[in-house]
Length: 473
Image (cartoon, rainbow, N blue to C red; front, side, top):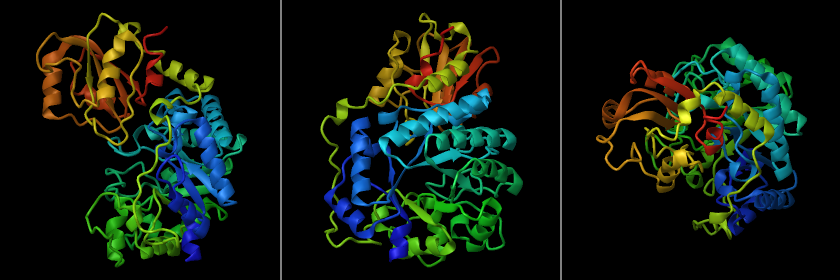
């Protein structure tokens, strides 16, 4: 029981500790807490929460997925760092180090102890739906030098670092949050290079994905004890292995094969952390995982004496709707964004041009588009505010004047539906400029669809911060 609790890094329901959570943490004294966007209102609130947690459980390690771009869980308080892919495109390791030092300083100032990042995966599968712009690139050497720079930046700020996702998530064809990765394991040396580079700069932990290992047992990495033992020797004997979120759908079939099915017994999708069986956690610890990331509290596996078993909705706290102002963008963040947009055609943001906005995945859980205050992009704010799944700000998508500007936003690879293709054929002018924001594969996918005379410009996050330098000299 103690070993199981001592390995857990649990998520909380909201920006304030529930009484049941407080009792559970005090009783079980887990290894740590992982913070998500639901736990953050603003910087002062985040500091209070971290201080409260440290006082409640001395030695508790507070972690966060705040790697930049799409995965910037604490952006409401700390700002949103540039996506790793953007930094890889610029290939300025000094800038990468400055960006990550600034992120580390902000995290430490808030009370966070460990960053779950940087991503050390090499993106070998272009249509990878879960890594995308979270990776620095496709070349192991480039990824390695930027991982090293990122770790130097974090460590110089005083932050502990957990690289991810061993043994390499870059070849995945499916999202492991839902189901198995659907890919052969990456080449050992190709995957190893960036992790060794990060370890050499002071990373002391590695997040292990629920990924195939290519061993004879056909087990996934987090449940393959011999594989983890060999990996520990290859990466460094003193590191800690953190299992990626233990509620991911990729664990369903392997756990069922071990005789530990999820209570809902579905074939895919996230498992409710409250319902996780104790044996589920034990299997991961027994395989050699030192830490278990869990997006919630596993009430069934580890009940607290004071917990009555009832689910409670988190109290969002006062002023949540009006309190989403975090720290201003760091100079290094702005430098990266300015450089990336610097090569775009100057007339991209021509206010006389009509825009069409297309989001192939408007309900995606990573969708983070935000409005931009400039008049030329008011449609962006309107559509974002309304959560409209429509393809254009105009009321009649398939008729009307042709447009010379196209905005495509998605954190997933390009896979337009039939109505999207019809829109492109009926509403676009013979010549124009497309701005794609999000997944690195969007540009190549769109290129096959657009007329040859169209110019395509790429950004690798979906947020107003990335738009501010578009069209500026």
